[in-house]
Image 1 (cartoon, rainbow, N blue to C red):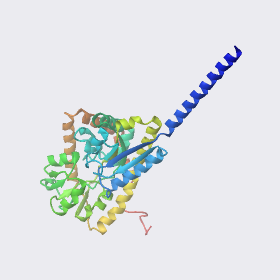
Image 2 (image 1 turned 30 degrees about the vertical axis):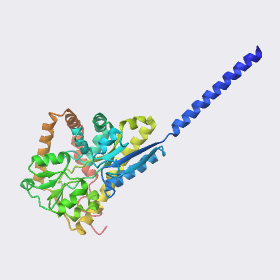
Image 3 (image 1 turned 90 degrees about the vertical axis):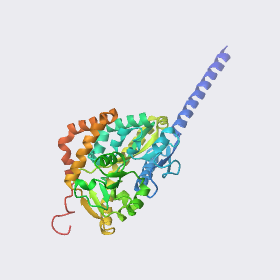
Image 4 (image 1 turned 45 degrees about the horizontal axis):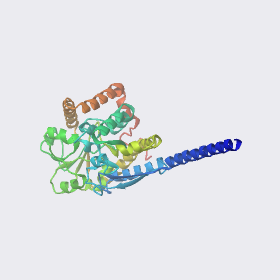
Length: 369
């Protein structure tokens, strides 16, 4: 009887050890599991935004200790350019890099996370996104309409408002202006009388060079200079008081995102935020250095858009947005969120500029320093 009992206890102990080993083995396996995400940018390798995408891919691998590896391709290498969001949502690729305005066909309101005339400046947008509900709203819309999880990775610095071969001295000069514009900016300028066409990045410089278009908008100067924009433009106009610019993001297939354990999701979100914040300072530095090249080497003339033109466009934009919001509940929610942010922090808006002001000179006001 004692032998039988001893054998039984020994068997139970052995089974318990086996179970513990299996649990430990399973735990180790889960902790070591890796993912490889294959995705595509909306631009080619010569575009600075592709370089930003490479930086983000590097950060993702580092922040996850190599558990997420990235196989990153440029436009059209896997799916046709500008179809990255659809392809990611359908699982054809694991992620797509794009500007939010690409979501226009199914998520019209997402364009307001892109370059919306009269809307949010890059720094304003970043603060609103992380501190006043923008992040939650974008995630909800992208989950619902595209089955992707958005990861902002570039806060593009203030855009050149317009690259032009015709001077803009009054609001009349926008009437009939043959201009490349995309997203909501194109809609507003069309309403104001411009002759707007939508061209992909690679077709804009040839069209400008041949005189097919008189003007174009696309991105900040550090991004467009390597693409030849300053080779074919005489005048570079900046907004006098409120330059706007888009976010650039990775849209990860929602099923792929939900596969990740919570700690990896948190690591990826940290990488996203750090890349987003870093990109703004990097972009400001590169814009400043590139401006010198544009003026001194390409002989472009830097100008400020006449205040009355800028004001007219901004006012027309606001009217247009609120009119569209009457029939689009998602856009109404974006504008309501902007309005709340404005109510809560509007009195302090000017200090954003003062915190970063250089004035009309570098260094000391006297002497060479």
